[in-house]
Length: 95
Image (cartoon, rainbow, N blue to C red; front, side):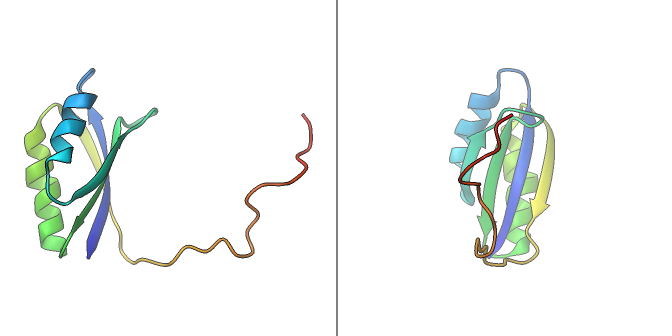
């Protein structure tokens, strides 16, 4: 399965419009409003890379009110593991 994360900058005040439109697109698994440089992140999945490209370049582009887009297509999936990693310290050092 082909997967991508798409970061979107919308016109001012258009976030809700874009999120509502993304919800209606087959292949958009989830979409969230962000604070920061980008306004929205969407997780897009399709059976193959060609369908994924179509969803991103044709379906999402048709929404309108999107000023810019950054697409990150996942190359390989590796299972994430937390084994051996420190998540937080029990006794943080006071500042």
